[in-house]
Image 1 (cartoon, rainbow, N blue to C red):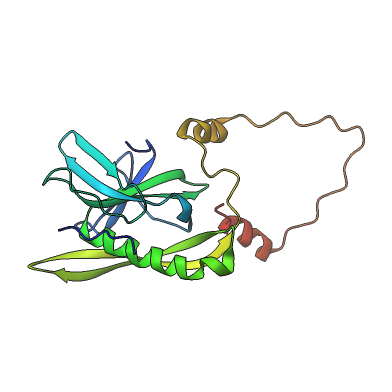
Image 2 (cartoon, rainbow, N blue to C red):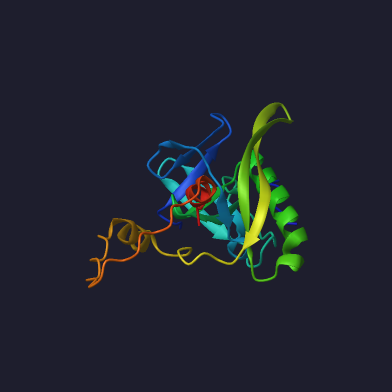
Length: 200
């Protein structure tokens, strides 16, 4: 469907390393990927060249419409956008066989549920990776479950600067209250747990 088989990016990104079987952020630190919103409308496919000091992205004119390979060093790849409150809006791109296979499967599953969830975006849960033998070598395919579909979160799509400013902004001063407010009802353990799980 995405035609990712092989024959300029956002400053806030994450990467999946099949060799290390780990996710890292743009600082190179390993992260545990939690529930994320997947912007299925912003998926890009194309040709990606990666090397020491080199990152050249040549997007397809249409999603999955494979154009001519720019150079032998360019491989089929993708760019997608993820979001949650912890990592903000971030980019995941790759030209690796395992990640390509993982995204192909994910996109196909999301596309199959899209008609029943018009105007919404899928919430994903990373469930680990599967070791797969490819040719003479092996790779790891990242796997995701579709947990639910939600409206696009308000914070999704902000620039890195906007997200950083939002996180770092001091709290607004408390309004002056003339009369003592009634005590807030005590939150149940379940309500607190739901709030802790809210990532979007």
